Image 1 (cartoon, rainbow, N blue to C red):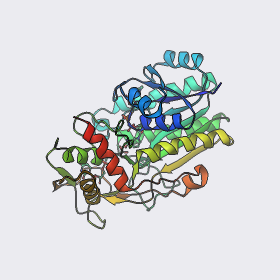
Image 2: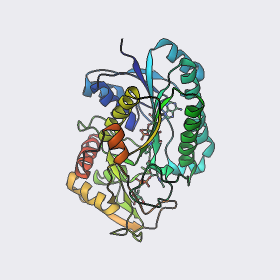
Image 3: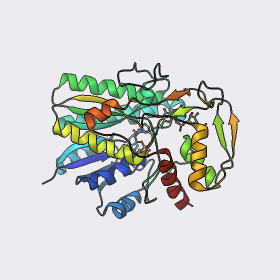
Length: 335
Ligand code: NAD
Ligand code: UD1
């Protein structure tokens, strides 16, 4: 019997796309999600796309008894752990919620895995652990720091997993440091569905293109970048999803290891370039105004992608236009 992959946060943005790629790769998927930032109908869309419906348990990663029963009742071979809170501003306002959900929740998950003897884990980290980059592109051995509670949870969790793997050989852990995930499945059936006003650029731009919002505020045009606006390494969520499958295969095929690896494209685009690309995809005018810098923002950030290529045999292949085309197809289906 094929062992299952437990996907926490599997109905969320990145989790749902990863479920599609796992199913395409022949894996059996079991999703655990408390639906705090997603909907159960995402499972219908995953089934429509991939022809298989993941198993689903509505529940919380902080619920130890539930986790123990899941590991008892299912033959879990590995865990891909997406579940967590991710809004930087909210984390500043409610730090304890972030430490409870992200840190305590993950520690509970690790304890349940330890007890069940499941020692393969792919973890959603973030390029936010590099703080304000001292060099570009950013290699994995760049110094780590955190500038807000959300980033701090990722940093602490990376450290906890490092301590765990040193204390107890046998753990296979991939810390995947995502750059800026955007886009949607090309079917337009799954995508990013932020609640309220989007914090991130791409979903905001998409809502301006669809007429839901009036104009984009460009946070700062006085950065030391070619056009003065912030530069980021946007990565298509389907490339990211494939990176998870590559990481899972790597962990399965190699000796126990703790691997921290960047998932990015290795090139940056400015805010204005993103707005232009989205205008091309949507065929809509995207009005914008220049606003003050957003506190805590950095000027530029893009990944050194060599380690992912060497270790995982993975590179991102989708370009900025494909990211915008697919995000627009998804956006156009939202009412
Ligand atoms: P998302 O909010 O769409 O998905 C997270 C999912 O986890 C949601 O479905 C939510 O309902 C669920 N969840 C949250 N807390 C839970 C809990 N305690 N128990 C069970 N389920 C819970 O977010 P996403 O964009 O798909 O991000 C997934 C992961 O990747 C997060 O850990 C996030 O911090 C990390 N990450 C995201 C980005 C990004 O830009 N989207 C960048 C870097 C890292
Ligand atoms: C943000 C988070 C980061 C997190 C990442 C993915 C902050 C400070 N950082 O990264 O920790 O890992 O999301 O969830 O929140 N921009 C605008 N107008 C907007 C929105 C954004 O001009 O309405 C600009 C930003 O200034 C930045 C770029 O667009 O230059 C990208 O912003 P965003 O999508 O929020 O991602 P990050 O700031 O890179």
